[in-house]
Structure formats: structure tokens, C-alpha cells
Length: 265
Length: 340
Image 1 (cartoon, rainbow over the protein chains, first blue to last red):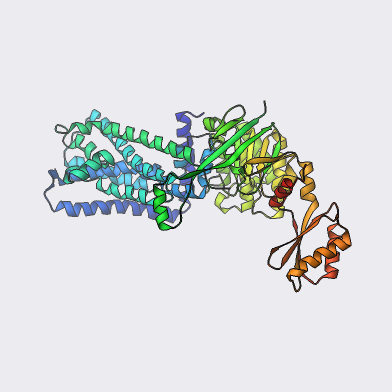
Image 2 (image 1 turned 45 degrees about the vertical axis):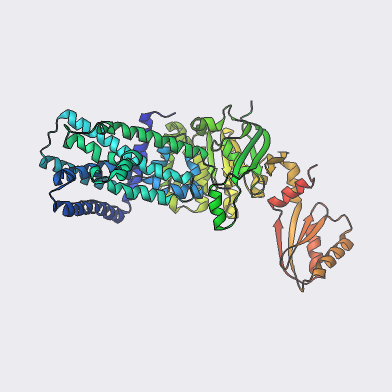
């Protein structure tokens, strides 16, 4: 049996080796990292151009929107960096290579996800941190120690929301022949996450709040920092949403793993 | 208590009865029309520590379903299954610690990493202490020449090298039982021999139980003292290999391409062979594919060389091949009562 410490140590050992192996393809590593950095900035650029020309969006100032965007970029990075292997699950399931994950004395989600570490996601994370700091300076936000702690907690929860939505979509591979459309949809939808939910009409807002809770990836938790005196009670649930959703995801994953029978041979 | 104890084990799969065509596919979406397939239909056996058991049977016989239950992937539908006193499906993580598995051509090593790093990661996963690790790595080096491959990425290994690495890796944590599924598939003769000798050596080293599934009867002959034949989910034979060995060893099939082949040729051939070798010749003839005639010979009764000489001097033969009896033929012969 492995303790949490064993798992962290193991993860560190595997990823160090993985990164080392990646580094051997130096050009690939450098180009994809730079590419990711600039694509993050480019998306922000578009955001900037469109929203910079209007004074506010549904009551949110431009710099507040930048803050939400920075929060969003940080929140989606752990999915990108740590859970990227979910994209391969349909191949493993279809071709029977998924069987090998049963044979080690390890938690299967851990073992499966540990096989990939997306380094270029780190540049996205870095870009998000820069943007968040820049926006909070411009907004003159007051960072006391408890508020920093709250920020870390909400970021943790928000990234769990993003991880859960994507991994849940990937789990479809256990039951349908080609889970790609499901996963692709989940991935596309996240582009709605950096916008204030009140720009969407009722049905969409309801969906993004309660069904596919993208609102909890960036917008709702950001409100705790942008207008702490005036938030709906829903916002206080954001740390719980991430944990609850991840628990559900883990349950579905376990169901899938237990019902998988492999290919013939 | 045996290491592996299986009693009346069954596994049923529910399979949707599919309809034809696009409209059928749509109706299937809402169909509750399932049929039950008995992949494993009441299997019982016990395996003791240190045994090498060949678990064989044709495709779809229920072999891999049994293996998947023993390795904790599938939950049995009924019956008793214990490995080292525990039910694998309910204790997957604990059981994985005492098992090693090599599944066909799918490597379990880390594709992008050098070979030695895979072994180091396995050392951490199974908590192998440094002393045992060093001792085992030395042993693998002696058997396989592993050191020469240490710095190579797994993806750059040849199939044979990779299989040797995978087999070594499955023994690293000194498991009580190792499952080898088609360990020699797709490999050439010399590597096959090497792999067989390595498996034998590893079995001897720690008295590790090995369960081997294979289509290659050569593997079975070289490694197993005991063999279990399964077909249609049921055990056909479980016992000493020597009796079955007579089947593998004795039968050879002579494939002939005869000049001016017509339907009458088969009859003429049968007639002449009976005339020459008598009624109890143990030879059966069949046309299996176009232009090829299969003459299966029980060498205990009639030497293959005699038949070959006779045919060559009496018929115009374009091409000849000699093949060993196939798994499917062994199973058919067992059905026909060859072991009774």
C-alpha cells in the first residue's frame, strides 16, 4: 500500500524522467513552449481588442475582465499540465492498451494520468499569473494574507472544476465507441468560462451554473475578489463545487474502470 | 492451500443482439434485446506454487477471460476464484503486488524512457529494496544481457528485446505468480528459444508460478509440465503434458501441391496410400485451400519420410511444405477422444 507521500515521490520521479526525455527533443520543447505562451497572449490580445473598445460589459470594467481572464488561465492550467493524458483514453480503451493500468499496485487514475506531463502548460500558467498580478495592481486590490489564502483555495477548487468537466467527458470512452466528440465539446465549452455569466441569457446561464458549471472555473470565484461586498450566496459555494464535482468524476471513472472488459486476445 | 484455487468459475457477458443496417442501428439504441454469452462456463483447477502451467485453447475459448479474472480486471459471474487466498477483483492493488503480467505485444514499460529508468520506477512502485534490486538486475543482465540496453529508449528496442525487458520487469518485485500471455508471438526462432530459456531460469530462481497462454505449441513443449486445454468456456484436458505431447509430436501435416489436380486426385491418392501402407496407416487427407492437399500423418504408425518418398515418386508434385500440427487440430483431436 502506498501513502500520499509515496505517491508524491513517485509522481516526482516519473515526471522528472518524462521531462528529461522530452528535453531530448529540444526544438520541439522550445517551439511548443513558446507557441503556447504566445497563443495564450494572442487569445488575451483578441479579448483586449474587442473589450477594450467598450467601456464595460454587463457592468464589468475592462480591467476586471482581464482579472477574470488571468484567473481563468491559471485555473485551466492544472488540467493541461497534469491530466493531459485523458485525451488518449479512447485509443487505450479501443486498442486494449488500457489493460496495463490494472497491473500495478497503484491507484489507476494516478497511474494513468502520470504517464503524461504537459510542460508547455507551464507557460500558460506563467502567463496567467502575470496577467492576474497586472490586473490586480491596476485594480488596486488589497492583498492581505487571508485574501491570498482565499485566492489559492478558490484557484484550487476552480481547477478541479475544469479537470472534472474534461475527465468526465473523457470517461465517455468507457461506454461509447468514439468519445472524441464528447471530449471536444467539453474542451470547446471552456471558452465560455472567462466571460461574466450575466451576459448569457437564462438557459445558458442556468446550464453554465448548474449543469456544466463553467461559471465556477473563473467568473464566480473571481467575484470574491472583484466585488466582495456584493456577491450572491452561490459564490461562497465555489470551493465546494470543485471538490464535489471531482468526487463525482472519480466515482464515474471507477465505474468505467470496473466495467471495462478489454479487447479480445 | 494452493496458490491459485478456482472452483466452478463462470463469466457471462451480456451482448446486444444487433440488427442490420442503419435503421437497425437506430432501433438498437433503444433495444433491450440482449443475449448472454458464457465465456467461461464452469472451470475448476488448482495451481501450486512453482508450477509452470500452459493454459491453451483456440481463439475465443475463454482463455483471456479467465486470465482477466485471475489478474483482477474482470469480476467473475459465479464460482470461486482465489489467488493466494484472496479474490483478485476485490483486492486489485494488493494482488498486483504479488503478480507479474506480460500481455502479448503491448509493453508495460515507459515508452519514452530509457530501459533502466523503467526499472527504477518499478523499483519505487513495488518498493523493492536496493539489495534485491541489485541482485535481480545482475540476474537479468546475466540472462538477457540487459545492461547493454539500459540507456536505450523503450521505443527503439526491437520486439524481441522489448519482450525480454518486459519479462524481466515482471519478475523484478519477486512476484508469486507471473502471467505470460503470448510471450513469443511474432518473434523469430532464435529469440523464441532465448525467451523460453529465460522464463525457465526465472521460474527456477524463486520457484515462481507461471501461467502461460500461447498459440505456439513449441512454447508449451519447452516449458510446461502441466497443461490445461480450454474450449468453449470448459476445460477439455488438465494434466501431464506427456500424454498431449504425443499428439503434438506425432502428427505432422504434409502440404502438397500436386500437378494437374482434379477432384479425382484426392481419391486416387487415398487409394494408393492405403494400398501401400495398409488400412491402419493413420493418414488423413483433405483439400484445405485451392491446389493444396493436406496429408496429416501419425508418425507413430507411418514415418513421414516414407509417405513423402512414395508421393514424390508416384505423383507430379510442384511444391511441398511440412507443418506442425496446429492448436485447432490438437483441440479437435482431444474432442475426438485422442486422450481417452
